[in-house]
Image (cartoon, rainbow, N blue to C red; front, side):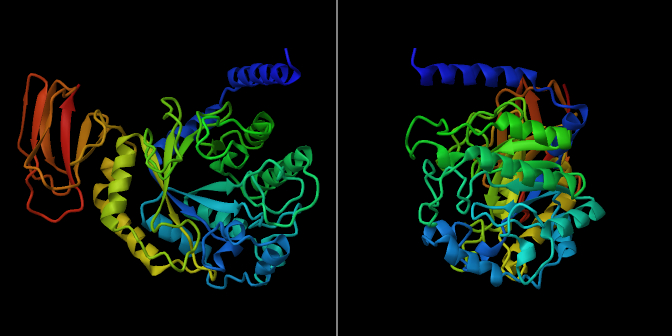
Length: 442
């Protein structure tokens, strides 16, 4: 047998044994339960990459060298940033957690780190963004999750030779993954020891090191030593959840599974190759416009109705929605984002019962809407308002004891015969989502 094949087999055996050895702590399982009930979070893509107004990939897409890109730190002075306002905005939108970019692919650290000079303390702003957000989240009772990029377009020790992005940064040094791994572990240790309790770490995958787009081979070109990284995180904060946006079946040590621009089980974006886990909490991340980071030319804002529909469909599949904003370089949140978040919050004040703490519905999303469930209640979400009634041929409950609109408890007509349920849905109001509550007997 060839040496490479022997090494691959050894790695597979080791990883399998690691998978068997990982037993999440009680606090981690409790955090998973909390996460599954939360259903809605705020994603924040923000940093020096916001300054050119071309999204978070501007360094790669404009082929900027490290020397030229570094100049951005001298312009990053977000005088309008207000951590209390950010957290309040999320809270008023009905969101239960915030996932904050701490370091994106450009290598800029949004906190006071000892392990890189390219950080927030070496800008005109000179204030630790992560600390301010962490303090405010703890104060207002919002959980904080931290995004951390596994790749880096800046560092010489990152394996750029096998990476597919960041090719024009001007790096000439030889890569050294052992050095890069030590760097990441040092930074993660800072994030998990300086800012109080953290709900989870959101890794952005190793897709940079996989085969080219379209290849059936999704394996990585390097050994990331995830078992070391994940073990460190769980040791420092046992409750801290780990998710990794690698678009693959979850690895050992991961505590939730995410989908980028897709609902679980879908792949309309061409990014979601993975099958939805039936064991781990699920999350879908999406944008309000078409961009993650601030983009001057992107005015394609989704409506509040569309965003509510996304939340409902995600919940009906047992998944959270992590909804993104890309604040302006100054730290101001665009009015278009604020208005839509406020609209979602207003909707959830009335209909939150049908979202928070629910599980996937007994049917997948339909053209007319979706179904969520909680205890002895089934919530029928009528999103299109085009049908006079909906029919469930295989209704999985013995009896419907009550049927009414969630908003005002107005009775709704229904019939149930031979496991076939028909629910009247011809409402004359202009609700974004007419939510019908069925109180059922299992």
